[in-house]
Image (cartoon, rainbow, N blue to C red; front, side, top):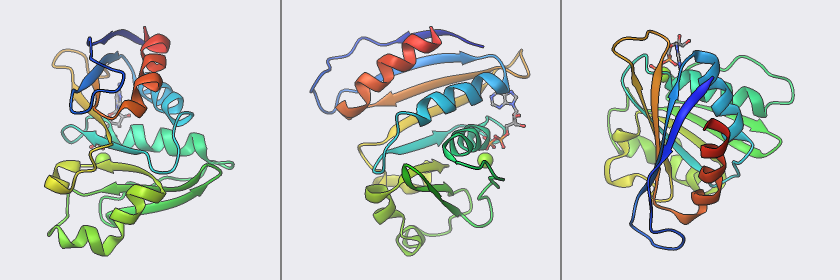
Length: 177
Ligand SMILES: Nc1ncnc2c1ncn2[C@@H]1O[C@H](COP(=O)(O)OP(=O)(O)O)[C@@H](O)[C@H]1O
Ligand SMILES: [Mg+2]
């Protein structure tokens, strides 16, 4: 189960530029999947999740759990490590899952059509640091980190500045508290 969720005090609603955040301890892979499935219920086209953290942190596990929960008939969700992008059609709309680890140039992002997807699709982006100044400002940042002592434990911090995430994150804080 998830536990110990802390929300930072914030100046919301309405202030732009001020970051707010929620932190969670995810004590198993299933706890991470559960949170991903919950977040999935709140997503609409135009929402972008930036999945940060080192190799093995659980970015793909989180994305896979989220995507499969939105599918009518859950199917395999391969890691886009080599394809860079995998796209899905789910009842909520189009969904893009990208892994930018192997991105060689920023122009590739444009060639992939990722900018249009930021507006029109639900986007889940692994290694979003590759976007540099092209990072969408309205995105929700999810930073996963490993626990030095507990193999199946992950620390997750969700950070946002766009007011659209505030109510949704209040709810996340409630379900994980
Ligand atoms: N609490 C946890 N949250 C996410 N993944 C976990 C957790 N505990 C163990 N794991 C395992 O860690 C691995 C994470 O791999 P992956 O999602 O591919 O990482 P990344 O995409 O960040 O490189 C998976 O095998 C997953 O089952
Ligand atoms: Mg991955």
